[in-house]
Length: 163
Image (cartoon, rainbow, N blue to C red; front, side):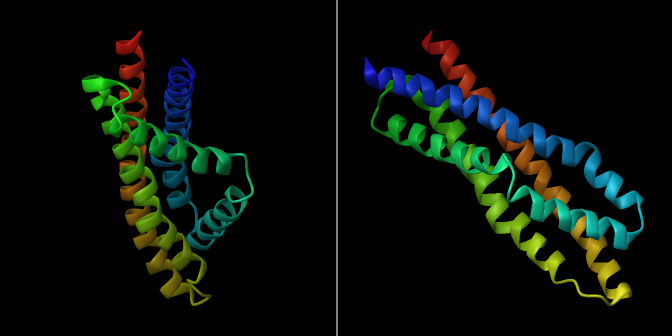
């Protein structure tokens, strides 16, 4: 019974965590990046740099690291057959979250943020980097948004299916 309780807790943590993260990413895709594009480039760059620094010391970080941990544990439980043949939504949700949120963040968004920090003071060069950053960062953020929400939905599907 304890294993089932842990699995249920992980499913809820995964579903809620992915939903919350997906909501944050959705806000960036839906209006934050558009707002930053609408202001002068130096101001937009400064605002995004500030966001990138502040988020590292915010309540978002336990969610950002805890949700992939829950997804990884759910994937492992699925591999060992905790849910039997019905585990496909859990395993798929975990893979989607780990690849589409965690992997994309590490491979694309974080390096873009690092390059933004080093954009320098040459305004013409910095503005060109900013325009590239806005397009690339937002494109990858759309994928993180979709991945997080999809993973959440798959975790909920499993919870509903298992009663």
